[in-house]
Every structure is written in structure tokens, then in C-alpha cells.
Length: 216
Image 1 (tube, rainbow, N blue to C red):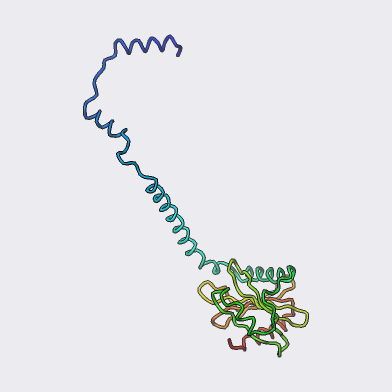
Image 2: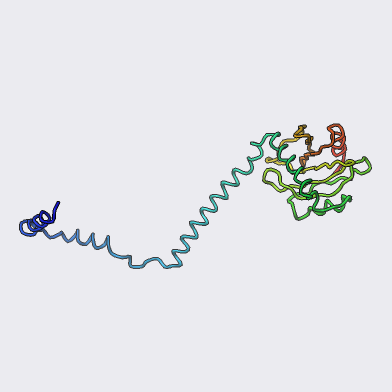
């Protein structure tokens, strides 16, 4: 459309189109719909509304995490856990972070974990049997902070990872080999234990048997 056509249309509307006044009810409805609110929300009210939305979203996320986390262990097979533990074992040797507390005395190592975990790992003195305690540290297994106890057998290091038993506890009674390392697990009813070492499987089995014979 050109300007002349627009001008002609405008003139026709102005001179010939009929006009009708809007009914009073319609005018009032339009005024009410377009009028500003008599009492607009204050900044405090708006802030509280926003905070409520944020808290609601955080609560929803928390509930979702609480529902998902307890089921995490059940989806993890023994082989995957063994791989994680072997990685942790190797990492502790390579990074020279074998122990956070260095001691051959189980009365020193066991209290060190107090306040750092929500459980108390049993620590045994097996030096008379040829497996002296060397210390302990905090480690992580599948996203969970756990206790790691360190024992020695000649020049070999044995890491014992301790996990409290419960609905989310990884399975026990496992024997696997990964990249030259042996992994054996057992349970005392309260905790699950996973021993990892490059020590030969027979001697590692002896170590596990000695651990199982100990009381807390």
C-alpha cells in the first residue's frame, strides 16, 4: 500500500464510518482492568515471595537427593567398587599420602577418627602376627568419606577401607584381582571391610582371617 491509498482510507473512515459510544459497563470494565493496583506489593513482600520460592526449590532438591543417595550403592557392582579402591590404594602410594595419623599404636589411631566420621572404625594390633599397623587416614569411596587403615607386610602396604553397614552399604565377601592388586572384603555385622594390596593373595587371605578373628 502507498501513502495516497492510506490517506484515502483514512478520509473515508473519518467522513463516512459510523461511531457508537461504548456502553457504561464496558467502559468501567476497561478502567478496572487497566487501573494500577491500589496497594502495590512492598519490597519486603516481594523479597519474601522470592525467598519462599528459593527455599521451596532448595527443599525439593534436598528431598530428591535424599531419595536418590541411599540407593546409590545398590547400583554399583563389586567390580566397580574394587576398581575405585585400587585407584585409592595406588593414589595413596603415589601422592605420599598414606596416612593422616602415623602410628603403630591402635590406641592412637582409633581415637584419631573421632569427630571426623559418623562411626568408629575398629582398629586391631596385628604386629605379633607379622602385620603391623602403620596409621590411618580419611578416604572416599563412591562419594562417601570413610576410614582407611594402613598395615604393612614386609615391604608391602595393605589398605583396609572401612564402611559402616546399612541399607546403603556395598556388598562384602568379595575376592578380586585388578592390575596386579588383590582385593578382599568381609563383614563383622557392623562394618564392611575391603583390603587392597599387591601382597600375594595367600598372605592377604591370612591377614583377612586374622582381622576376622579380632574383637572390636
